Image (cartoon, rainbow, N blue to C red; front, side, top):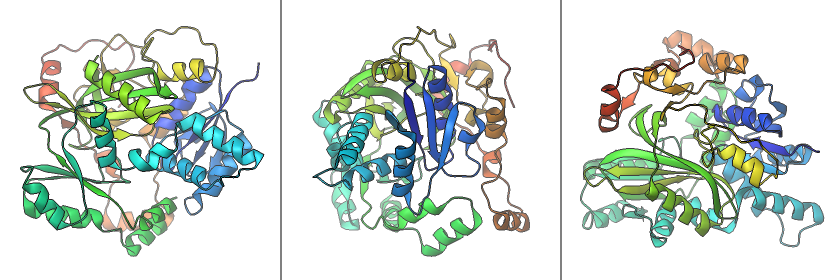
Length: 438
């Protein structure tokens, strides 16, 4: 029987594509990758058949080349820009399609779902929140703002503090918490201002494969939203879907993260009917296929879940093996790729999970209480994730030496959400069954 072929696409050096590749290959898929070269983690795993080079200056031609040569049955974009590239490729196809273009359009729809919902809803933060609220999902008040006058009008309706968010950003980079009108106005101007040409050129000259940053110069109409501030602690869920039906998913509350608004490092698995309801309603509304994640705030006092954001891609939860109904990669292989898979048990009985390598790099205080998700079967990948080679060019390394800079990842700090962490701190450490690295 022919093994199904899956193409993973990414425009950055996050470790998740390599982790997904391992699971997909283990379950019987032939895996291909499109990523920035050199130095990507996908090159450090034996699970990938072939890796194609992502060209940030000409992203769509490099994406099309990878699709044509890999001939996949399914495409998994692993970051926000990779999602946008696939929709951009679809949008450029003519309406009177030739046979090959019709097949490409069908492949993208098969992998991502309804194209028309991406640009009208998903790529705009305030439109996504609006659509979710229309489906009965609890969400904070959110509005698009185009000027300082819009902020002043918003103040008449919503007291400070607020959260300002820029479309087309991720990892907390386009998010600002503001506690005064002065902060709000300054943050709005910063978020609306595109990066200077000098900063982009500097990044390209000093770093490896940063040409994708040129795309930010084209974001001349970046949309900014302002959102009601919800006091509490973060939670999130991830699901895999097909044509609007949720196939499997996991929900967690965040114990700690890389900073107050950055990616999680340690989480606790929980069953939340509110998160499940939101994921099912949004998947159906968008007619989604593939992975997506939702971010929530659990409000202080009420413990109500407020949807604050959607990640239209796979997230670090997606590759985890946590048993029936929670194993998203296995659900994708069985129900979308029609690949028979033997039932698998959860890799851990613990409900506290530490992401690798993030939790190790920030020396999380919760490592002794967590299941540390390490790909021991791929020692080269483990070493690459723990000790990544610098993404700087030779010139960039020389600049680092003269300035005395250190690798910022080695200096990562852990931000702890105290309410979520209190119970863990009162629990005596238990054995993981596997060694902790670091």
